[in-house]
Image (cartoon, rainbow, N blue to C red; front, side):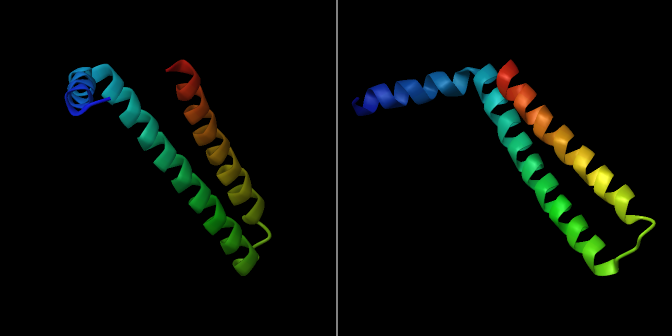
Length: 81
């Protein structure tokens, strides 16, 4: 593949806004899932440090539901697109 073909391919990709939107959406969702993983790790560390018996299960359930929802949303978008 020579230079004009590469430039032509990049120009075609840049003009196809649907593909750019899909790539951007998937990248944003990947970053969001990474955020959910970091949040879950922080909450688990907080629960082990603070050791509040009354709130620990609530936080664990909320973090788990959030992580599953974020991962499910990413998988849904990957299969849909």
